[in-house]
Image (cartoon, rainbow, N blue to C red; front, side, top):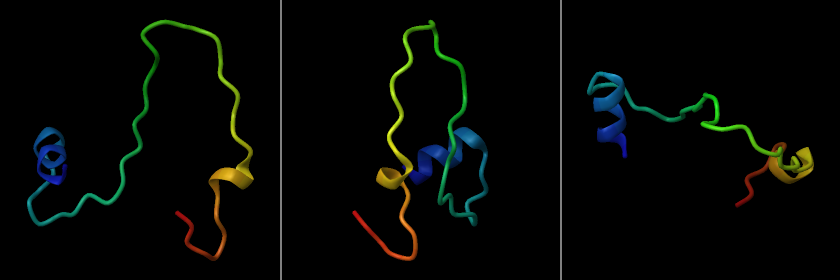
Length: 49
């Protein structure tokens, strides 16, 4: 989606988007879901898929 992201955000053609961090508020408040332990989402010194 490089081209769409660049167009929406006004990113120059010679710049490559490698990461985005979407932030915002929910439309309505609900119950919170549990968080995964950090050991399930963070990798140190290795690649995992």
